[in-house]
Image 1: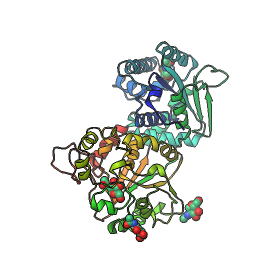
Image 2 (image 1 turned 120 degrees about the vertical axis):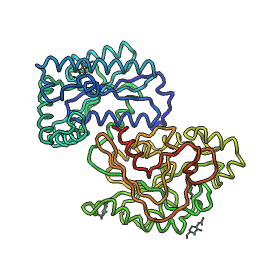
Image 3 (image 1 turned 180 degrees about the vertical axis):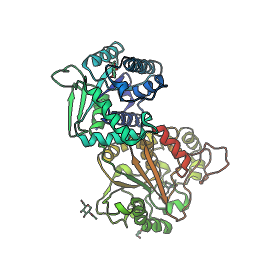
Image 4 (image 1 turned 90 degrees about the horizontal axis):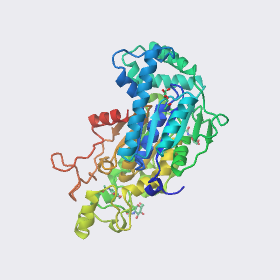
Length: 462
Ligand SMILES: *[C@@H]1O[C@H](CO)[C@@H](O)[C@H](O)[C@H]1NC(C)=O
Ligand SMILES: *[C@@H]1O[C@H](CO)[C@@H](O)[C@H](O)[C@H]1NC(C)=O
Ligand SMILES: *[C@@H]1O[C@H](CO)[C@@H](O)[C@H](O)[C@H]1NC(C)=O
Ligand SMILES: *[C@@H]1O[C@H](CO)[C@@H](O)[C@H](O)[C@H]1NC(C)=O
C-alpha cells in the first residue's frame, strides 16, 4: 500500500453522491468517510440534505406523508433542500479548497443522478456514486432502531410510531427508486454495497483517491462491538522522566498489569464476561508486560503500534532535550503535529503508519489495544474526530482503561481508572516540566477524564 502523500490529491476534487433508500446506513457511511479522510489530512465535508430539509420546514412535524410523491409541498421543500445542499457544497469546493464533498441524499432516480453528474463535470469535480443497497430486513430494522433513537425527526416520539412511520416513508421512496446497475449505468463511477459488504460491485473507479475510498468502505462492518484502549503500565523510564527506550515496567506498572484483567471484566459487565477479546500490543516490552496477565489467547504484536520514535532524543528527559536542542524543543511546541524528531518521527508519521491498523480495526470485532501515549492519541483522534492541532496535546493518563463503542452517529466513551498511582507523563506546552498545571496560562489539554468535554465531542460527532 503506498504511503499517503498530499501531493497525490492536490488537484483532484471528488464528490461522493450517496444513493439508497432510507435506513440503509448511508449517513453512517458518509460520516465515517469524512472522519477517515480528515484524519489523513484530506479536507472533506458531508452535506446532509435531511439537515437542510429540517432547516426549511421548521413549522410542521415531519411524518411519512411528507414523503408521499403526491405531496406537492413536500416535493418542493425537498427540492429546495437538495438545491441548497449542492450550492453550499460547490461553494465549499471553490472558496475553501475542499477535496472530498459528500452529498448525503437519496438520489433515487437515474434522471436525478444525471443532473448531478452534469453539474460535477462542469465544475471539474469527479463524481462517484456510493449506493447502499439492502434487502436484509433485519439489517433494515436495526438501522431504523438507530435512526429513530438519534434522528431529530423522531425526537419525543413513541418508538412504535417512529418505526411504523419510518417504514411508510421507505415505501414512498420505493415507488420510484432505481438502483444502480452496470447494464443501465455503464458510464458512471460507482460503488454498490449489497447488504453492507456481502457483495460489492465496482464500476469505473479511476483515480487514486477514489480507490482509497473504495478500499475503506470495503472494510466497514456494522456489527456492534467495542474497542478498549490502554497505555502500558508505568515504566522505569517514566520514573526518571526519560522518553523512548525499551524499559521494563516499574513496580506500580506491574501492579496495573495484574489488575488489568479485572478492569476488563468490569468493563465487559456480567452478561458479556465470557467475551473473547483479541489483544494487540506493540513490539516493546512494556506493552507486552502489561498484557501478560490477560486470559485471552489471541495476542498480536504490531510494529506499527510502537511509540513515536524520538530519534536522537531517545532516552533523554524533556529537560535534557530543552538544554541540548533548544530550537527543536520550541519548534516541537509550536507545531507538535508536524514536528519530526532528529532522526525520528512526527505525529503525522504515526498517522501514516497507523493506517493499516485502522483498516484492520474496522474489520475486527472486540479488540483491546495496549500501546503508547502518542499512538493512543492518534487512534483516539480517529474515533473521536479530534482535530490535528489538538490531538498531540490530549492527556491520556496512565493506569486507565478506556472503552469506545462506535454507534451510528457518535462514539460512546467510558473509562475505568485503576486505583494505582503513577507519575504524570503529560508535558504541557512551553515547559519541560511534567504534570498538568491546573491554573497555568498554557494551552489546556483535552482531558480524557473530563466528562463534560466528552459530551461535547459526542455532540460534534453527530
Ligand atoms: C438527489 O436526491 C434527492 C432526493 O431524492 C433529489 O431530490 C435530488 O434532486 C437529487 N439530486 C440531484 C442533483 O438530482
Ligand atoms: C513513559 O516511558 C516510556 C518508556 O518506558 C516512554 O517511551 C514514554 O515516552 C514515557 N512517557 C512520557 C510521556 O514520558
Ligand atoms: C528488564 O527485566 C529483565 C527480566 O527481569 C531483566 O533481565 C532486564 O535486565 C531488565 N531490563 C532493564 C533495562 O532493566
Ligand atoms: C478464544 O478464541 C481462541 C481463538 O479462536 C480460542 O482458541 C480460545 O479457546 C477462545 N477462548 C475462550 C475463553 O473462549
